[in-house]
Image (cartoon, rainbow, N blue to C red):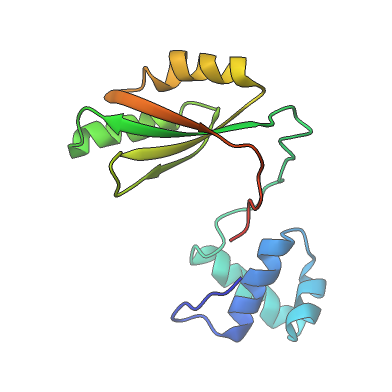
Length: 154
């Protein structure tokens, strides 16, 4: 992972790289990996959290083991792209658990959704009952993923 952010020195960038790979690492092990003592490492880590570079910690779940191995990407075109309509759509997308990611794009469609479900039947239900009924949706196009080659890295 390459990063270059003004105001972050090499130690800060090293902390972010290590934490992105292992968010459960102890401060002692983190300090050893980046070449600082524990106290300055802990202070830097706290500052990176307070400044919003580290936004939280969570468990990464294996969707395949959880039976969620069907991934579809959905192009969404809206009937209205004024700010109020976008805000309503954005809020509604956040309430659909099966939508793993949502990106507004500068393209010939408005949004790209990553949807993860159990199987094609579940996807059809999500598309028909949830995605198509989101506010201002004019049309959708679906692309089914056959294999994830790379996922989840910064």
